[in-house]
Length: 249
Ligand code: 13P
Image (tube, rainbow, N blue to C red):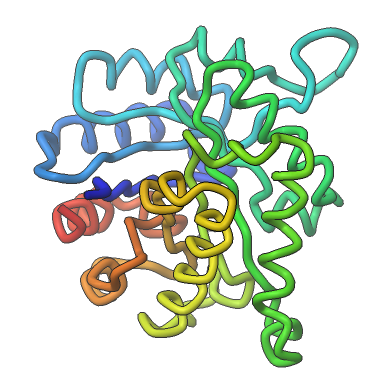
């Protein structure tokens, strides 16, 4: 039985005071029954958020992680640094990183492997654009994004990792994938991972992301292969985020 995970990706939002207030509201919303809850603040807010969440029910993660362990990589933050600061998770390959910062499948795969090596659980984001979906390329895009990770991290890549299916056309648009659309892609992801290792496929948590909110969360997480959500906009509003967490539990 997979325990659902609801993770809030705060993206590049908020002041230090906002981040603290948001973290406290979510921490105070615990305990959460039968669901794991995580927040992913901007790097600079991590120490405050970790301090607030320490000893509680809410896990903390980062929105990206360096592809290297240490050294002359200006502007990057390593997995070991994040782990030392109390992070459990790191997003890799969010479509905003791929699109706005030109992160290739190969770079994303290296970040994924570095996260594992540094003691973090990577949350690999995959997903197709609207043009790719309309061209019938959804599965080939996802297969390519997964294969790049296996190429670098090996056949056991998904033994202790999370995948988030985030159709690019659903992110921040209000156009959520239907539960059936999400389920079809999630089942495809699980089947690809299960081809490498049946047990890893069975255990893998696959989150849905893209305009997920309190109103549509129940129908999405009710699908067999939807094991939680990666929430953007709604994760910045404590009541909305807590409501999604309770729905998923
Ligand atoms: P929204 O929930 O704002 O659509 O963002 C989804 C997302 O990108 C989470 O990583």
